[in-house]
Amino acid sequence: MNAVLASEVFELPIRTKDGTFIASYSATGLCGLRFPEPNKAAPSGERKPSPAQVRAWHAQTTRALLDVLNGRKPETLPPLDFGCGTGFQRKVWNALTEIPLGQTRGYAELARTVGRAGAVRAVGGACGANPIPVLVPCHRVLAANGEIGGFSGGLDWKRRLLEREGVAVRG
DNA sequence: CCACGGTGGTAGA
DNA sequence: TCTACCACCGTGG
Image (cartoon, rainbow, N blue to C red; front, top):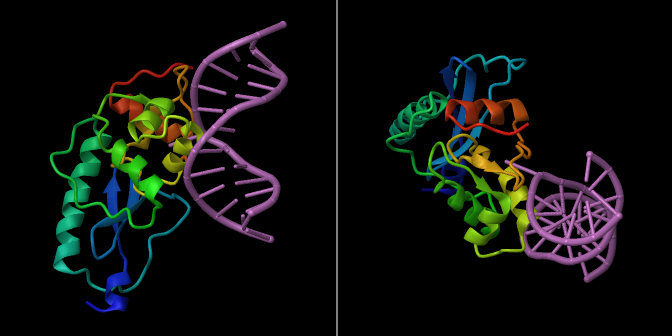
């Protein structure tokens, strides 16, 4: 595969009752998921047809996203491409995928998990840089005092996702 | 309740 | 390099 093809990214929409998400795929898997942007119109006109591999991944992504939005654990995920992250960020993102649906962790807890007990604030930064929210569940990380903490996609989304999973948040 | 210092990783200059 | 951020945390008023 040449360099151009290897770096090509395909973007495909996922329509849900919460709006239309946009999934991005690289040559090695799902590399991005964006929340619905109501103001932005869907790209019009012809799009380059997606390879069969991308379509297969997209079917998995779609099922998994709808599952999580309905508070159900997805059966399978597509391969995740964390190539855009630093080593530290990838460790944090991998740790996030280990948090079961309906459970939460603290930032400090996550810091210990990745072997950097003191890097609590940096963990927050890595969560904020998560390119695949919802499926890489950074919304399951709360502050140590039980408050909600932050969310790059907006706190309304964090609260909504936790609510669908049956998690009560203080505040 | 609030203030503050310690803290590690990142981005930008 | 140096510096200025931070989705934090614990302690102390």
